Length: 107
Image (cartoon, rainbow, N blue to C red; front, side):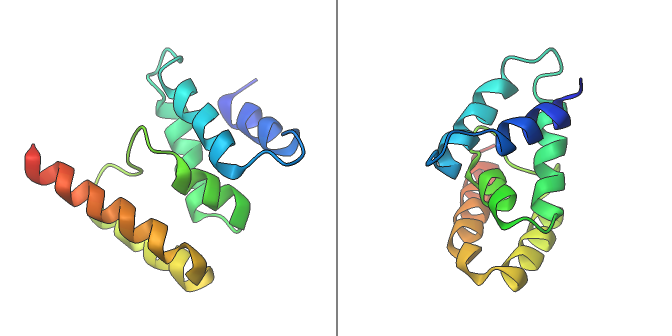
């Protein structure tokens, strides 16, 4: 069983009323529990960000242990697409971009 199957299973089988943030927290913890240091989880996260499921996208945006995508320009392009589909997510996307810019300026 691969990590995408596991993440999709957890998404479909999550407890009734479980917030998207709570599931995002589970995925954030799993990043540090896998032998590949979460690489496969991050790939699924990016797939969810680029997909057509609002809930999966919101979960992926709520993960906060790592930033999505290797570079900020790719992240910004994907976020523009997300915002065009779901303007409700603009604030979250803007917060992530701002945080990444701040972190990059300190490194």
